Length: 137
Image (tube, rainbow, N blue to C red; front, top):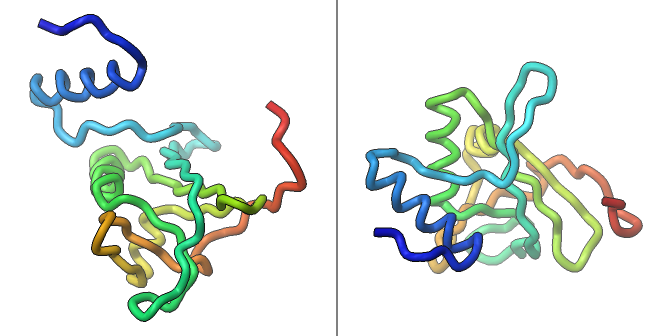
């Protein structure tokens, strides 16, 4: 029996577990899904500081948890829907984006040992815009 739901986060967690119990695989929740022309795209939105170069990876970069990467790959394999990683860089007004399949195809990345993040070089991303202020919503 499902207990009373407290909040949205809890309901999402319980829904994921229920779907898995019902036999669903690769249960995931991209941040946004939209269509541009005929092309559907899942969008993964992050607000992160840039990864800074070190001995293991000599690039500034942006990353994504490898479990999310795995699930977005499965989404594309099963549906053809590609995932776009859109990153708002903390402490700046910069926004960068790139398709995950294109980042993976380049074969240049660093897997962090602690948080299981795959980091891609910043130069592989498109700089969308530098904001002068807040976006009007």
